[in-house]
Length: 108
Image (tube, rainbow, N blue to C red; front, side, top):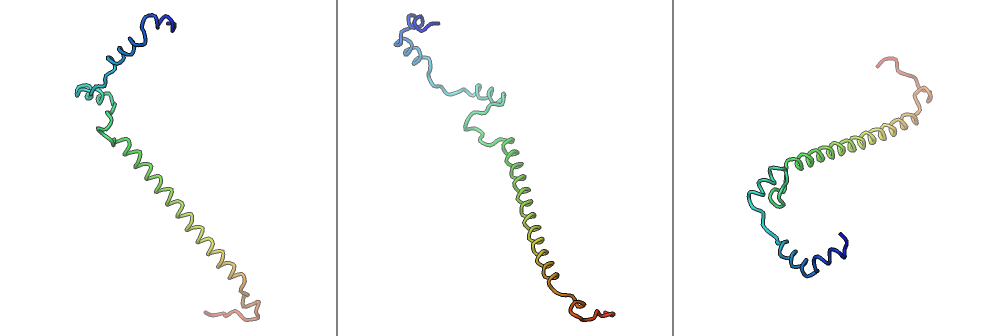
């Protein structure tokens, strides 16, 4: 419809009165709420926590814990590797007994 044609059928005052009478807030009936629940639609404020959100939160928490343990293990391995490098450097710096002119004991 054209705007001019629509405005000829209804005036602005008539539309305001019609909408004011038609659009009235109502409380949903219990039968309507049951029908909505049956079709997997939740009424706001009734059930804040569902099974699926619990599963999603639990799986996310498990992944975060696993990643944290992976990071901690990597830091531990890096520390052990660093200590090993330090110990190897010390052993390379020490001259052996043969280089100092000493003898190697034959019996222990």
